[in-house]
Length: 124
Image 1 (cartoon, rainbow, N blue to C red):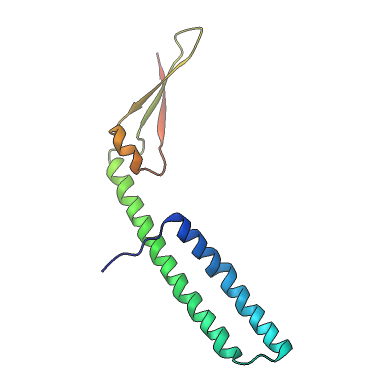
Image 2 (cartoon, rainbow, N blue to C red):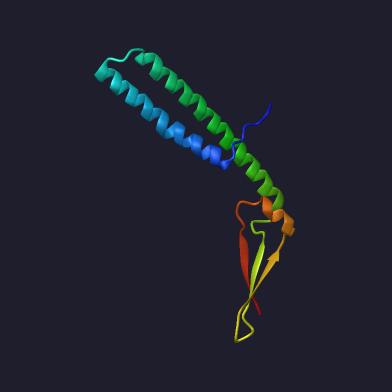
C-alpha cells in the first residue's frame, strides 16, 4: 500500500480548509437556507460533512506517516544518544572566546534532521 504524505505547504493549506472553511461554509449554507428558503439543505450539509471527514482522515494519515518518517530518520542519525554533538567553548584566550562545533554524526547526515541538539562543553 502506498503511503500518503503531504508536503508542509499542502498539509497546512488543507488543514485550514478542513478545520475552518468547510465547517464555516456548511453553517453559512444552513443559515442562508433557513432565511431564504434554499433547497437541498440536508444534501448540501451532509455532502460538506462527508468531504470534511474524508479530508480530515487523509490529513491524519499524512501526519502519522510524516511523524513516522521523521522519527525513523532522526533515530537513524541520533541512535547513539540524545545529542548530535557539542558546542565547545574555549575561554582560555582573555581577548576572545572560541566556539568549536564538534559533531558525533557525519556532517552530510544533518540535512535529514528537523532539529539539532548539542551539548555545551567548556574547554579547560
